[in-house]
Length: 247
Image (cartoon, rainbow, N blue to C red; front, side, top):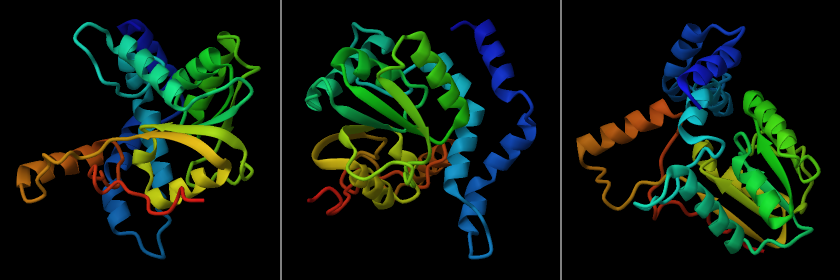
């Protein structure tokens, strides 16, 4: 995507909205969240949606259709690393034709299209952002994959639109980092997976090099959380969801 296409995409994405007002409102999200009380109606799901409304086109400009990080070798492009990483996920999930898979937080659908195309499975993408869902549906149709992929407009914090025990497999690629309550999010994921289903999850974490007693480290973490709408960033040891996936 060149700069001209980015400009065109931004105009379409922002059409009918007051961008300056939206940015100002987004910038205050953590203050509104910290002052939350029974009398307020703050919902972090709305903040995440606002973040992607504002930044989604820039993400596509930088990443393409797959809005996630991947381990990068010196001899491959970011796009090649994303493809390799998605193929690793396909392998680890042991996907078989005829299975139905859930993509939790599908973005504009890059991974779900690869999963459907290369594994021959049906994929249902979950996303609460209408702009991203509209683009995902358009790209799915353009790829000729409408018979294998579909999208559901809902948050992974409340997937009541999806019945229990529906999916043979599932994955979440850097989406649940936005969950205000990870146990709640994974409880919903658990509910819609069939007993014995495999699940691939990846998200941003603080490594063991993070020192909570170092003010510089805390400032970097705090700024990152604020800018990309994260209520917290778990440590690799702290990212444990006790008993959620036990049957």
